[in-house]
Length: 352
Image (tube, rainbow, N blue to C red):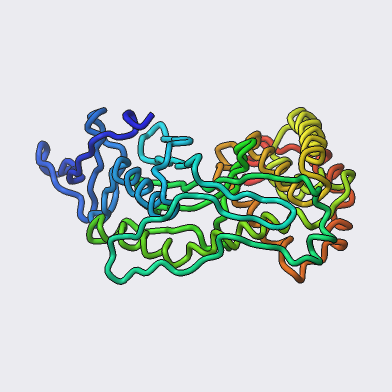
């Protein structure tokens, strides 16, 4: 897909015909048109100080950052571009970079990382290994033979239109099923950059500085993934957590779709309990697996994956009351299944 996504662009003035002098064209102030030269058509109008970043440059920046962070040349896992060609995203991964989780904790296995070519930058120390306290290992509901792997991915989102920022974020996916779990929002692993800057080097410089400052947050998030394994939840309750995380998205589905997804959720819960155990890590995998079936125009992939990550951060705080949380899930499945389905015409009728 990359070749189709990497088109040349040109910037021109916004012109309009003078209504008092037919045939005379005037320029609209403080605006410009971005033209897709491969299609020979305008794709957006932006402010004149908007820095146009071609998708190919955003792609190369993402690849450079992945190499800096993980020491490996990445492969493209997934690409997406809007029909208007203004919006583009790409996920980078590498088979040589992984976190290995077992009963004792986790460890990072990867290649030595490169240093950025920045005179001020020194890579801060970060935890490449987490060994759980002995008491926690003994009490944790983790099988003695349990081993799992998660791999980091880096997502770049670029826009050739106003009112958006470039986004670069780090997440993890479980190696066995590639469930995306973006660790954005509260984990400070999301870089956002306005396009109103002097040049592309400013964006590159800021991105490298950001990730070299916050890279330890990534490893802290993986510790949260491991801690989910230590928090027990019964098989009878585990499937209810998906309803809690995605209640808004599920109630937007038709009654027929909800009935189908109810079966899907129960099947996923059974499968992950058998594979991972009766704990919140299995519940998270149910949710992230379900998220792939909930993507719509309203519920984008990023939003759904962040929703699961926000839930993970909430339930792994030391002050979190698990018993109270699980008690609050009573009746949530029936509530979601019986919620009235509002079609678009119903919403418009209410607004009028």
